[in-house]
Length: 347
Image 1 (cartoon, one colour):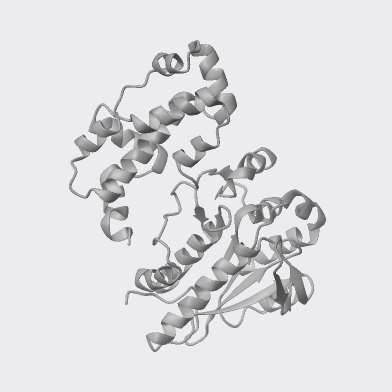
Image 2 (tube, rainbow, N blue to C red; image 1 turned 180 degrees about the vertical axis):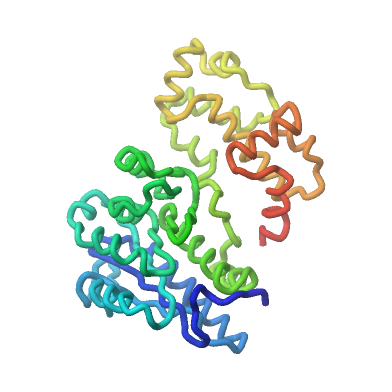
């Protein structure tokens, strides 16, 4: 099994994961990653190796902390205790995971102590992770300035507007920038936790855990938070939705603004304005996203299809145009994408 030990991990001592919760935290975001680390320990034991992770629940006060659902988690340690332990610099490595909330603005306004705590503790831990809207805690602490970050798609614009020094990636499932990791919402926390397991113990162990959770291993961090199809289903305007559906079903066709406006029986100017109003993106950006997603599906499922054919099937005039689209949006060439995510990555 390919592996390398976790960061600063003294032999035989598990890496500590401190899961930070507060009233109203998102239950699934806490329990999902917790399950990943638990399954990782199970598989390590099966390989005759010691546990890799010791997970603790941490909050401002010890005791039950109510989530956004019927479930509560019991905090066994306090923020102050964790900070004190980090101050001594001994013992196992530590990763802090800050969970998100549905009402991040209210929570943020009510939690200046948590923001100040994050600012003090971040330099002393191996990894500081914020799930979903939890990225706002790190942002408010000034930790993400000049760095890339992800968050839940519904608050990405707010994060960018409020903290202009952060390079917000509104589409990424998770982003790793040095010791700071941020993720999109809910299930993306599981993807990020799997990435940590892979980082600490290698791909094979992460794959075993993903199979236990019946997940595809592994959506890469740069993968889109939701599909173009899903986004188009959220469009209320009938004529605009009809155009989006036609685009998705006819990727091989040329798609000028004039042709799309014609389908919606609107003038080009009016069509463009209504399209942006309804979808938050221009018609050409939507067409690009649809073509990119179509090409990705072909690359993931058809290992022998020539790139020229892939380009033609999604309406890109040439292999070069396809390459430019991939590099611009994903930072990776089509061939490299296929090598990474085609075949063996889709178990």
